[in-house]
Image (tube, rainbow, N blue to C red; front, side):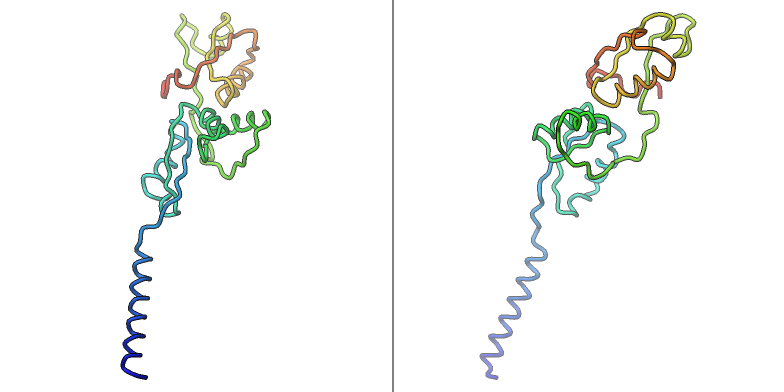
Length: 182
């Protein structure tokens, strides 16, 4: 082999090595996705994953969009303004029954504790939910169309209170009092 051939091969190998090193250190372009979440302690795992860069390590540039309720995030997803949504099972079930088609690939939390609360105004000596709701017809606010509505009726059912003993008022998630009675 001639000296020029050896030099040519050396230059080619050096260029190849430099090119490979440049390519491997070049920042990878991340896929941008939007995820709708409810402003809730249950979303802590998703928020921590974003803060710790777990999504970036998987090639995703995640933008979290917060909603007052999971059902609102799901509605935005179904409407096409989000790539993904995290909501409870009741809104997903109701949306499916309304004819919407989507895939639920995973669950974020196994269970929640103390996520459902009843806040009531004090009324004399009535100190139990049973006595409070059976003393007279009460107004009870809940968010219609999601988990809160389901659990409200489960709560009333457990107390043996019928629908005609209470007046259910639709309260928007943003109007609810958060963290009361913990």
